[in-house]
Amino acid sequence: MTFLEEIGGYLIMIRHAFSKPEKTAMYSKETFRQMADIGVGSLPIIAIISTFIGAVTAVQFSYQLKSIGLVPMWWMGSIVRKGLILELAPTITALLLAGKVGSNIATELGSMRISEQIDAYEIMGVNTRSYLVGPKILAALVVVPMLIVIAVALGILGGWAGGVLGHFFTTAEYVRGLQDNMKSWDVVVMFIKCFFFAFIIASVPCYKGYTVSGGALEIGRASTQAVVLTSIFLIIVNFFIAFFLLDSSGG
Figure 1: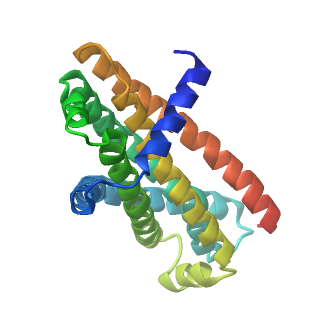
Figure 2 (figure 1 turned 30 degrees about the vertical axis):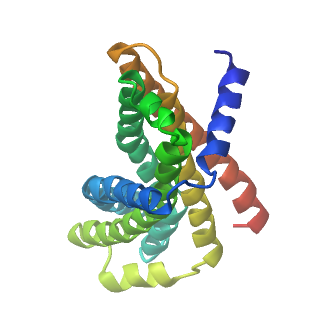
């Protein structure tokens, strides 16, 4: 397929994914199942990595600032907070989910396509793009922002633990930095990223899995392509959001 055909197929799938469901209860049950798979299933790895990302950010920046000796160490709270909210928590969480969730979604739908389960649903009159794709995207839009908020909170906690245990700053200095010059626009930008990232994380793997053809080898390729393409799109969208929104806000 050509690039334009891929784009067209993707947009058609998205249009059908949000069509009116045949049975609301069936779609609701599938949405909650996807929320559990994406959210609960991903929480442990997100919690561990975000905590240590916050800790290593605090330790490395503190080491650099102490070597300069010209910057007050209470700035570390502000640096960790802003870094996590604007970049580290949303981007790293999204990339982790692209690998874990994206691969699972592409493999699940690819297996259903190869085993003709999707064809069976369609014979029964089910709008498969709506039933199999829509709940996944909706679940991601609900759960991914929650995971990123948790990542920010745990990252800030990890930054405090790493800095205090390393004797780089005191708790009072860190808290002062967290409270200093807090901009609500930073949080707005974070949530904008959250929803764009969530849509990409769910929709791109859905398309690669839904359109797979062949056998088991093709499923593996589709899963790999889903992770790679999702990661690329996440980085590109992250740049444009930061470039336009942070520039326009003066932040």
